[in-house]
Length: 112
Image 1: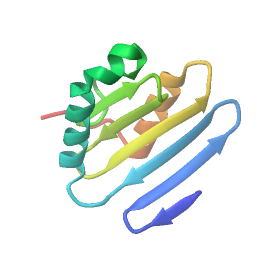
Image 2: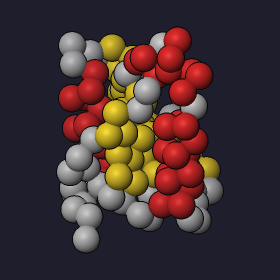
Image 3: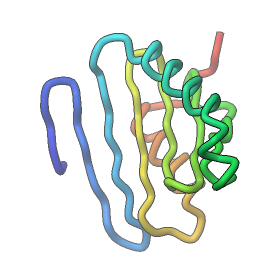
Image 4: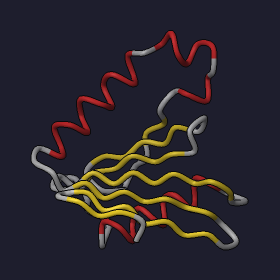
């Protein structure tokens, strides 16, 4: 564990891949995730210049998840927690981020 405070825990792993995972259990996790996803999706000025900055929806991971390739970061929620996984190095950063997110959520949560 790198850091832990009220409602936030950050862990880091370094080996064949390097990964930083933050789990946020502060109130209204799902609403905050939805707001951030919507704002990022509306920011076309940013990803017109850098298409890798456009969020890519990830199906079957929590109640909602998206990958931002330019940041090598996956954002997900199970409704009660926000999980942010940033991959520093890996052969397949998106796959590493997905696996770390599944582990952080404890299980894959299917939408109702």
